[in-house]
Image (tube, rainbow, N blue to C red; front, side, top):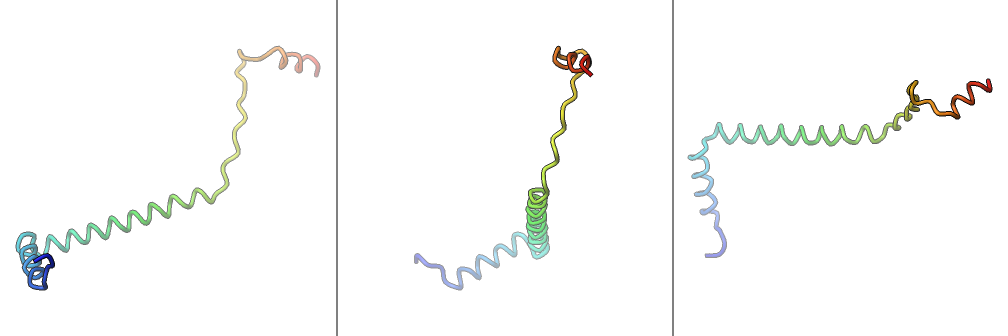
Length: 78
């Protein structure tokens, strides 16, 4: 009684087909396939940026009102 025979599986399959119908099951499997393809595409896109070198960091420019006395000294010395 602990194991399921082939007849049990046939009855389960028949009940599933009666409840969902052939069209819904094929639509469901198509949606699952699209999801798997989308997942694989997303994983491939995540790998591509890791291979590219990171962009060079931008050097921040001081704002005119934030100049330090050292910067003013350099301007006067030149």
